[in-house]
Amino acid sequence: MSEEYDVIVIGGGSGGYAAAKKASDLGLKVAIIDGAKELGGLCILRGCMPSKALLETSSRMRAIREAGEFGIKVGEPTVDIEALRARKTRLVDDFQHYRIKGLENGNFDLIRGHAKFVSPHEVEVAGHGTLKGKAIVVATGSLEMVPDIPGLADSPYWTSDDIVDLPRIPESIVVVGTGAVGMESAFLFEGLGSKVTIISRSRPLISGVDASLSTAMEARCKDIGIEIIFEKGLSNVSHDGSSFALTVGENAVISCDQLIMASGRKPNLSGLDLEKAGFPADLRRLEIDEFCQTSQGHIFGIGDVSSPLAVVHLAVMQGEAAAQNIVSYLKSESLRATWDERLNIFGIFTDPELVELGWNDVEAKKRGFDPVSASYRYDDQGKGEIVGEKNGHVTITADRKTGKILGASGMGPHVIDYAHTMLVALHQNLTVAEFLEIPSYHPTLGEIWTYVAEELAEEL
Image (cartoon, rainbow, N blue to C red):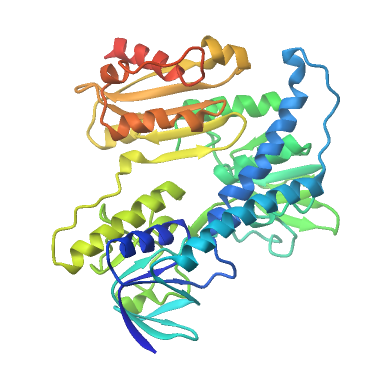
């Protein structure tokens, strides 16, 4: 079989589905190819949704243990692991069913199988022959990245894929890695009752975010008993059938019931044969511009395979932008749809949560701005004091010359939810003065953005 499409989308996760749907809505003939064992994508099946379902239970257990601060006498909570697994599965099944319905009933062809390039405009799918695409979107996501550490491959360590199945609740856990997966894993199992230790190769604890957030998160870990080993790496692993012995640094050995490797993810380019489409054989990431276009003009990249930040909302933005640009490309018109890098928002669902969006001081300076920032603590804010937040704060960064808001960050209760207030401010290019014209209800956690904006207005 050889059939020609306006657009071939490789990958049916959140970004690929968004690209296929948008392209078909714009009148293009579209095929979407997905070779995964199950339809649904990483976020629904093994990432965002199952992990957050488990974290919700963990956070509630922690809240029960901390209830004495609010005048409530309770005993030590226990978890029904079978009921927890069942709830998580029920939620994921519902999310997956909705996505499968969209893929199977969309105005595009859904082709199940693994795709690989045989020429710049052709992909081969096992059992379906060769498909030709005037334009092609690569949305193959990412894979777990596990380092080559002596003894690790021979041990029953867990990754994020294992955690979402919640095989058991170990008495003690060591987490290697301090990104979103590592920190969420640490808080998940601490909340469920495990003794948790984090191994961090560097300090600050969380790289890539404002240093003050990392310091606040370190203080929170100390408060709840999560131990952190700084500036040392895991150098050897052994397992005797019941427990792990871990060599940290040169010779320090610690033991635990379970090891979790949360050492990051890498773009999933395996098996695509991208060199046959004109890319270097040693390609590690599918680099894209602001239009999602690669060095091969008819090939677009979206989501984790090309994005600087592996988050769903960027994958969806990129998928929709790629579809719009393909319409222009096929008409030999200039590309106009962009994914706005300023609208990056990155959250870690710890307890409390951590969020960063837009550009902080360091990133703003790199882009030629003269940034100025101000911060405000929750323990000096009405609702923050009421809910008992002791470590968290929020920050807003603006351009000194124009007063325009460039970014924001924070660590606090449910801060990811009301960080969307600042995302709207970024989207609308508001100045600090314009933002302060928007009223906030009192007393709420979300009004803390106006407190810090007032501080920032004085700085400006």
